[in-house]
Length: 217
Length: 288
Image (tube, rainbow over all chains, first blue to last red; front, side, top):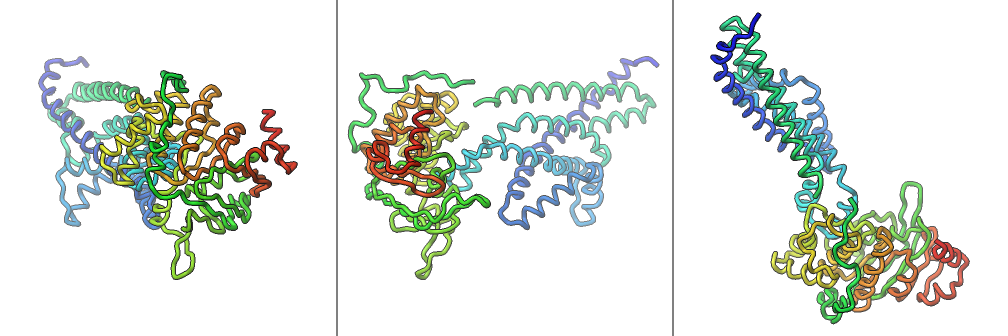
């Protein structure tokens, strides 16, 4: 078996557009995970036991079920309840919700890491709750967990091929279609592996940079 | 990384003294007389450990009282109860005539709600052993954050007040620095300025020089001495620095196991203590 460069050149444009879908799904899903994770964290800390316990179990449920099952559920079952989403929207929603339970855990750890003295200074200064969170606790907590959050971005990127399961023509989808059309699998599948590696390495470097930048005040 | 010191810790002789005109001290500008503090049968437990057992004492308006005593004797707990950092388990604490941890309801005292605590806390400021500056904000914002969002000052008014206080503590040129760029002594001065920016009537000083390198202690103590001398704040101070306690206090309370063993003017407590436990404690502190 020899590598066919000409053939690779033929499908590469399609593959790059698949990569675009992958990147879009990852980035939008990640933004959703960052915001929703914060909501979980705050709900988890609610003074109401009912709210915090329900949140805890919902998070536990989402984390303990496979992402692919969740994607199928959103794409195939939600329409039965009147919520029909396109494949890409469903995929983004699935990725975002699934990973939000992980980012929530990261935020929780970051918040726990904010020294008690910071909370006490807030009390001594009589700062209202909103200011305590917005101006003191979250900026410090998030800064500490930027590297961990960045790692979840990369993990999420690597999970994005699952979206092919709900018919999104992302990178893997394009490669699979190409393979099915030409009965050649070596070039398409190797190419996506290379593309994944390239994007992952670039992201890792970016995350390290962020880490260094935010390591000290 | 150890903080680097870029300015002298104590003002050079050419510089004006920190507090020249008593009118500049913020505590004066809040008008009203500083309130007294009353502890009535105050109980505080941590688990099974009773730290304060029906403690009674009071501090007169504008009085400067230092609490001394061995570790675990409950001194810091008293300050933390006043700052509402610890919950009260029994008894009543009053600031002025108002109960701190209770509200009046139909002639009876009921546990305070958050709004009441918020109102009461406005009278009290605290300086911590570990400074507790906000590392994500520069010095100026550390000083303006609460005046803007708690007292409702405009940005300009809060900044003006902050600059005035930074001049007072000798750090007028550090407004844009971040806390991590300052030495411990400088951080503690910023923390003092931050507490004063809220114009409290009661100032709590919790071992404010314990975390400082020895050469930085004097500058902070001098500053506090000046503030104590020229303001009418009611001050409660916990310290292991007996010289500082002697200078700053109108009265010294010696604590052991949550009880006042002995009290009196500093000359008496440090000169001729009448209780053996006081003598033992002072000896131990001076020996260290």
